[in-house]
Length: 487
Image (cartoon, rainbow, N blue to C red; front, side, top):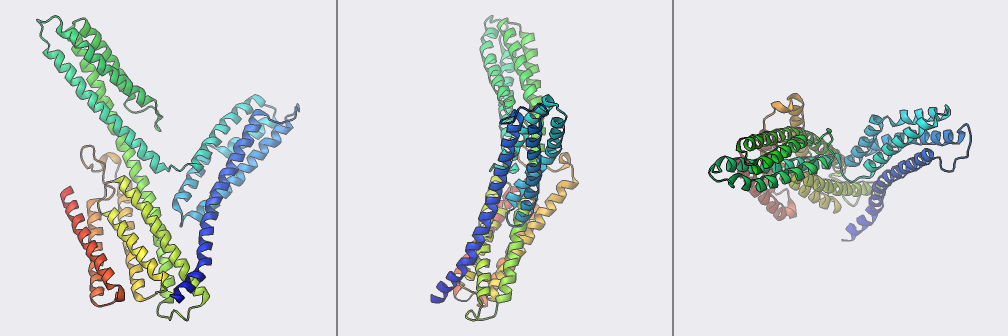
């Protein structure tokens, strides 16, 4: 116990240093946000001529606009350097920085800032003021992107869910309108009040369609006009005409308008299905990219930990230098970071919802990573720990291989040629063959660890290891059954 406490005290500085490093990088992003906010405020001041002397030449405005341009140049360099530094350890933050940099390029921010300086030097204040307002709006959008907690994947998922909701609503309206048409066709020609009685139900369906169309057009869509909205508007117009004809007891004209309304609703449904197919494809690509970045970062960290543990294996704990103890403490901290990454990845997979095996494998991965951290925290660097790290790295290799295979398939086949899961179901994140391969690899590792347990290599922790392996074997059997039922 005294040795463990001593080691814990010695490891505290390196852990604190690691925490400080992560906080420093987070602070860097905050500082970048403040710099960008300063640029926005400076640009706003330049745009409105605040505190600028009344000079015929506009020299004060030129100087202020030139300051904005220089700040933008420095900001871009800072963002690029920080994105590179965060690539391996914090891929989500690196991705957010790259997204912001991409937008800087797409919006031609630097070129527009230089043009503003030129316009002010030429005395074209009206043109400069107009361009400054536009640039100010874009800088504000970049600030929102840099500080937003919502990733592109979150936005794509929200867009997909919105389209799915619109599709369900259109389908319900289509069924309802078919009912309206059927009642019109069945109305007795001998009953003078039969058709006028159908006017109110038709207007109710029209009201629902109008509401849906306004809701669809009330949310911006990345591709331009919201899919299905124009057709929904035309369908509502035909419903209105149909209701008028029903009130006038003009059966044939009412039926014709009801048929046209159904045709427009079907076209809206078709357009929504096309848009959903595209959004689902983009969501899958972004999900795969996010997962790949996470798993690569985890694998890199695990390899570093393995190298540390392997270099310390075999030697007595008492003979370790202070540097060795600090390296071991850093390895423990790294394992805990990987465990946190596992939790983040698990949330992504659960939200995605189409893969059976990956969430369970990530849960097992986190369990092994935590077990390794506990061993290292006790100063243990035995061959067993090295073997557990090898198993973790092998699992990460297998997962990355499955993701790379799916990514290659998506790039080779156009979206319309890819197999669909059928109906409204999204295409699975991983093909069934890849999941079976991961399942088989997991079974092989359970078999190997069971054999090692039988040989007594687990030592005093044999009971815990036995329970862990038993639980995994049961979960593997359940997953196999679920995959079989899904076919």
